[in-house]
Image (tube, rainbow, N blue to C red):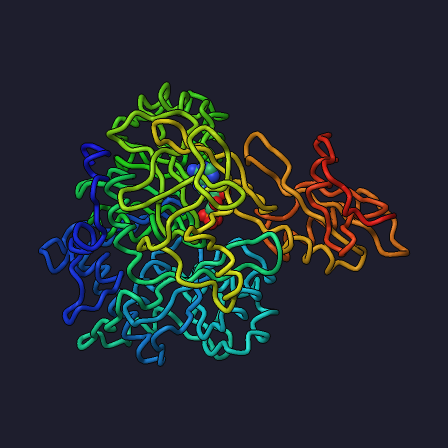
Length: 566
Ligand code: AMP
């Protein structure tokens, strides 16, 4: 994007966006075709699509032709297994090449992928698979073992496909399971045809957390690909020759929209790293593979800042051309630090699972306002609303809202129509965030409007953690809040009351932390747990998390007229 104002002026998704896609013969749209096959059709089959680096430094390289051939093969496996349009296929895997190939194959077969974060314990996997009615699960032996106890409870589940990469686990297949590599080698993809999905067919289902109730399954459609493609250009500055590195896991929306769709639709080489965060590990990758565009998250940036300039200086990072960040507010200090260390600003952008793609961004061609999430993407109308859902003038904090109808907008919360409807008011989609707008059209994040906790960029529904805690015999009630933290932005803090016959102790606290870590995931389990004699609740019985938070932080308690009498 050379100039923001002219790109935005009169932009029309159909005339100026969808027209840049190839579409399927007959007018259908399939995002795996747009990501991979069309580059092969355009003569770029030999171009590198994916460089995969394993956690032990192993490396595999795949051209666009390789990706097409392998995802066709997996598509043929899907057909053979009887995967039908809109079937939910869950993928519970570390960042292995098989994850990406299977995901593309399922999309080609017309199925809907449900990627799950591999650090999840059995509870979140069970909740999500049961809610979605999952028919198939693709996983690894280690992860299958972790959730073995819940699999029989997923009544809709027909088959489990196991990818034991390089025989890493050395374990035999469990009875009834299918081996990924055998399926692939036996599949006949010679006559494989991509399902004739339309732009309105479902493609991906990601779960997101709310403040009450179980996580919601957010359904996206194939047409989201146009926005992922365009924002790849506009907000990540992707060009055909880029080496792109996105640190997000496909268990979260950034890892699919920008770990797969945006880079591949733009024909770039996508560097995928199986390992987790590490300043040296990241800099090694940038140095070795000459990464040009890097998309990461504020937590990672804060950890890089903590690691200091030593690791920066001991690497050659001169290939880097553009850095972007998403998931939480990017502190102004981080932008300043990025300028000092990398000689370029870190570009913050804003979006969420429900929006499917970037909505508001700092752009390469525009001055970065440190601390701001930038300006709306062309074709997107955003506003700050007052309590009556009317737009407010610049300078005041209010409800961040978007005009519905953008291409990557979620189409449903799976089986939660009322919840879906409640997100739309007076012709606006209500994001759940608070923000303000300045005179020049830049948006500034102010906070969340609900109790959802943002820990290291992961949204955590307090209810899910509370539910896990009360599964423990000692816990009577639990209330969970986000407590400010310099690295993770917020950490999960829990308050519990105990059942009779249980005494509070440091051992019990440790046991509860371990218990929830195993049930949920260490990433979203409480970092702190305190005991209370009485849980503050409203007269209608709702835990007053707001009050727990105010008391924890020593802030005014506000209106407590609805507080239940002790
Ligand atoms: P998720 O749906 O898990 O991707 O989380 C979306 C939420 O993360 C948003 O509603 C915000 O609360 C937060 N978020 C994402 N990007 C930003 C950003 N650039 N600045 C501030 N908060 C952000």
